[in-house]
Image 1: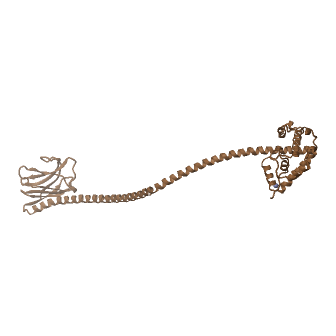
Image 2: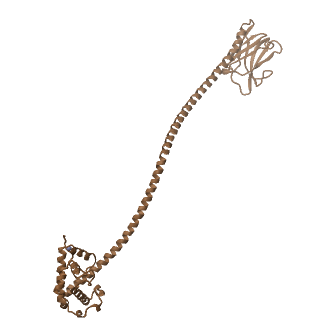
Image 3: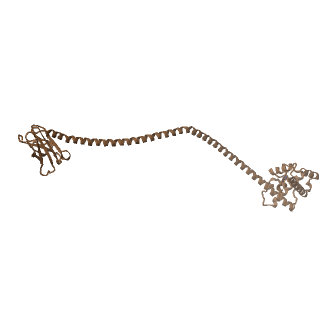
Length: 384
Ligand SMILES: [Zn+2]
């Protein structure tokens, strides 16, 4: 087995049987497994300490046989308890060391609470060893060992504290880990639920999306159909309006044509009469635009055509008068309102009124007409 060796102080303390804890176990294990490094080191210390003990307490030195056995047993069975298992010479050496340590307290007065001092009752010190005069080398070695012991104890106490703190921290971390595991498990369960819900919802969502797309398509179709219907309605309305105005203008034209046709037809009927006479209409002063003719068939009818008649004031009408060669000498031929362009065609088809007529005239009269002429004269027609 390869071994780089331990601290020299560890071998010193081991050889004295006062090394504690893991270090002692470790060196013991090395010795048990035949580690030569450790065996030689411990042997060297044992030899040194036995020489030292022989010099300090000659009467307590081990016998040659005991020493030989001891040296032979190096590594075999070092004591597990401080002092108790030491060979006789070792116990004497330890007692000596403790005594010297007690004395060292006096030498090193700046160490008032030296652990070795606390650990050892003065009564336990064997009387024969009570007052040796330590050599300078011995005092130095004792001081070194005392400091070493102190360091070992402090290091052990520190290690115990750190171990306890480490345990507490480990427990706390374990608890946190457990809690985190529980949270993870809960979150996983929740995630599974959500995933399942999502899976259940997906088909319904797809259906709804398809239904929405269908409805949108139907809506689009209906909207474009409505737009087409609106355009058709607009076109039809325009056509209806056009046709209506066309009907109105055609009706007006037809009415106008029949209005013009009626007197022409009358005139055509009169023209065949051998007694037909024509009167030329003479405009009154200030009405030069008026022109026209009157056709007379005695004892049958009077027909008057005029144009250029000006519009009258509201509440006034034109009235035709027939002047005759018999009583009454003047009779009303009726009232009338001119059409477009101031044109008018008036027929008196009463044989009684149309008898003996030799002159016609037109005046401006109140609405409803008058019994005799009262207003301004517009034209007069006389026999040519
Ligand atoms: Zn070793």
